[in-house]
Image (tube, rainbow, N blue to C red; front, side, top):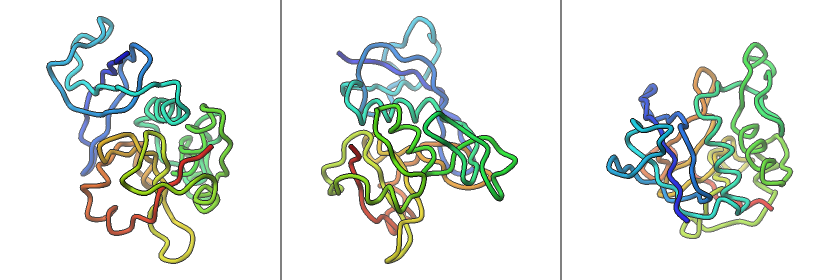
Length: 193
């Protein structure tokens, strides 16, 4: 079964973010901008539509759907738990939201998988996946040189990831395969569970 998720796209400081509209059906995965695709009657004016085509009952699909519901949530350093956004620590102490590993920990908890709240720990929690074999929900790691990675995002499809980038930003989507920055600091992917 194919599902349609309707989003409104908003430009946010150099990137794209989407605000979740309505999910119908039981599927998740391929992301495409198709203004002519049908939308739910509950959100008739959404355009473009992001079509989701893989089974949402997979763990990766469940994690991706949970992360997408957090689009626009503020970044909060140290923020996030398996239950949702929380007040962070340090510079995040006044903000309720997610840091990068808090978002992925939350998303995968919705799929029944426990992850640590630290990018380096998540890098070691699962099976390594080659770039060409990515599936919806896989964790993408960036930076850190030869030490632990310094950033994590959750793969959606077509080179698109969802992540909590930095202080002052919000949970957003980014075309990491098209980004010279993210491609240069890509460290690898892990499939939790």
